[in-house]
Length: 353
Image (cartoon, rainbow, N blue to C red):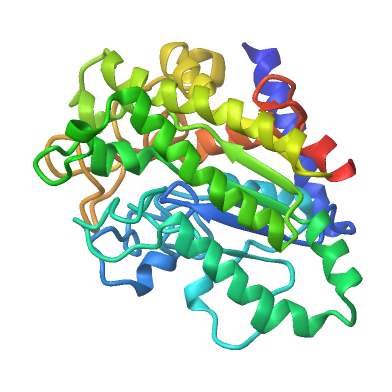
């Protein structure tokens, strides 16, 4: 146990030094949902917001709109790359940020209607369209030639985590959405992955080559569904296992059909489930309960201004939906340098490929 903790510390210190060195990639572009949102939802008419304490309790800038107590996986990857945190797209005016952008939007998903019950959010297709606008209005003007722009994009990292809300805020809400009645679990997974594949091909057409995609995590273990119980809802986990199976096959297919593309699969489900079932392996003691005080007996977001638990680094969950910075750090570290989480290569190898 102690050796493993020292191993993580050693790996993490590696990308603390990266900030003072030449960046390992020219930019980091982030797409997804609340797992990666860094503030876009602050500027949207939605109930899905996290721009208040205790969110950001351990983040230097406070409550920025990140749905956790501190940094997200995208933040840790940016640090490793030696890049600033990608700013939320909606917060920008006219300035050019050639080191990356964050388009992620909490409560949204792959399907356009997902998350609409909370208000406005940015689906994956809208996010890709915004990246297209970034290309046309900013990046194309910054580079002197198409080749310079192509080289910049082909060496940039594109990070994507999306799909959980298509289950949490769609398929598993039959009172609002009819998808669970119109699609079998397998057909729904295929619909999501086929829709996602179209967006990946659009990103490729715009110049993306190094694309890291995270699985959907074990949603059946969320406090939202467990309500404090020790077990997970296996039925819900099996739904996303189907999605993850289809996702892996799709990424392998795109890697062979799209010339020079490099797709990396982040095994968020495997790692998340393992951390919940064997928390001591990852330095955790509470894999079940939210650290912050939530509405509905642990089954919602954080209650504003309520003081969170004192041992946040020992918790897997920050609120009813999202992990703590501690787990994000572990996930990022293993994806950057490990051999079991991000496949077929880790991010350290990807940036050098």
